[in-house]
Length: 202
Image 1 (tube, rainbow, N blue to C red):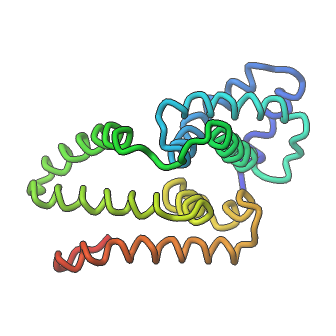
Image 2: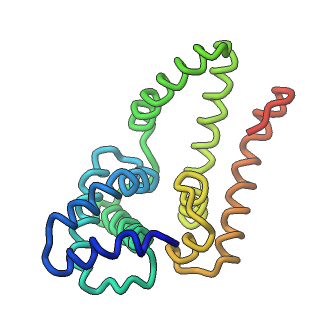
């Protein structure tokens, strides 16, 4: 992988006390970290605080970073642990509230709907795709933590099986099994919806 090599010079500068170098790492990875946290806690108010805490912990721990994994993977592990710790401390349900989800997804779906309509999609087709997206989201939320994290890292973040195995600290075979089971659970939720629409696929 190129990631460890690409980040190594910045990491060495951080270890020598160069705050600017750490700021560059924050800029590089902040959006990805926030996206991951958003998939875990689903509470928009918590995301910036958890992301900030993640980077504070990473800065404190960076002297111990040996480059045995990609910095990106190492940082993700800190983000996952920080998000879990926050949820335990706040005794909050990790699933998104309906109001928070609708307010966030409506923004995304509105712009997406405009694009789809401008491409000649009918309102019915757009409505159908929104319904499918909502069903997929609900299916993902219903998964166990391990399955949800595995499918999110694979399908949303685009990580390789090797990276996910390293991040989740488990064998690649376990990762494949979790992703397979997650996809099956999502497909099961979608089948009734798709059976009513000939020729549609997810």
